[in-house]
Amino acid sequence: NKKRHRADDTSSARMTASQPQVLSVQRYLYEKDFPLYKQPIEIGFFSLDSQRRFYNDDRQLRYYVEAESSPNFNLRDGYRDRYIKRDESIKEKLDHMLQWILENRGKVEMAPKVEGASASSRHLKFDFVTWRGHLTKILTTPYETHEGWLLAVTLFQGTHYISEVETEAARREREDRSARHEEMTYWGYKFEQYMCADEPGGRPDSGGTVNTNEAYCTVVQTRLTDHHLLFSGEVDCKDNGSPLKTAPGCYIELKTSLEICNPKQQSNFLRFKLLKWWAQSFLPGVPRIVAGFRNNSGYVVSTQTYETGKISQMIKAEQNCWRPTVCMNFCAEFLSFIKKVVILDDPRVVYLFSWDPFKDVCYSVHRDSEYSFLPNWYVEEMR
Ligand code: A3P
Ligand code: MG
Ligand code: MG
Image (cartoon, rainbow, N blue to C red; front, side):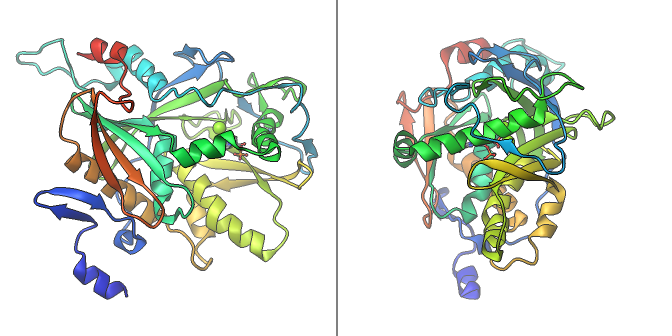
């Protein structure tokens, strides 16, 4: 009963003395007006090459090539002999973002105070630094029923750094992936190859090698309620057909999905898949998602463009569907919870936030543990 819950529980964060211990994920707590979310602004980008080396430039950016109306893209092509897979057992944590920050300090640091300005230990003008993918997980938490998460948070010079820790369940899932699942992971990347050219005005090279080490990442700044955010996310391609638009407005997210053949599949698509697609693209302000619909044999037989900003309308008629406002309000409250809980400003301390479906968010504190993730090269350079 909603009313009784509301009367009992005035706050989503339950307090003991003055420190909140847990945060509730129950949806009704977040059914409020849509919170302020400023239009994300791209303040930089970086590339990772075929050997996962970092470059402070856009050399890995690819360009969107519209598919013909009835494509017949074979997503299985090249899986055996033209696929180089990134080693997912290597945990890069926030390292590439931190490297970008060090090479772009002028864009992210607070302007020095006029009086008594000191060059050392200037602070970032952000409350949070993280990956877009971590924020996507937070946004979808109120609707997630299968996978929990672990998020490590370190407060350093006034900024909260958030870095994911792989759960035991996720590690087992990764190590026990079936051959079919392994191949289907390739399909998403193969679709990108059919839809992108390396140069503006170029053609896709479907005979090339798919190398999932390669990435182009945008770095955006934005604000959610009173939280100033700096995050980075991988971008699939740029649409040069809209040359007036600046990033992130010119970016396109590519996706694959099973063809929709019956009302049950349509409902699942709206309730589960579009939630993930929306959260991922809404966060960095990517306005369009191009989906390739595939059959069970791995052929893309049609494509469809979705406007990120219209997805909330598309799902309105669906029963028991998700709501963007719940996702965003939960995220804002979780970030507030982090600010209340994480008080030790120390690069060696990690507050480990954990969540499992149907439970509250809780946390534990660790000093000099396996969870520490801010590297010395970053800490020393920033001090
Ligand atoms: P699809 O998006 O077509 O599923 P992204 O869409 O985020 O650009 O990611 C590209 C592809 O990487 C995905 O294609 C999918 O094949 C794979 N991928 C992304 N996230 C994944 C995950 N959590 N587990 C397995 N594969 C994933
Ligand atoms: Mg991608
Ligand atoms: Mg994609």
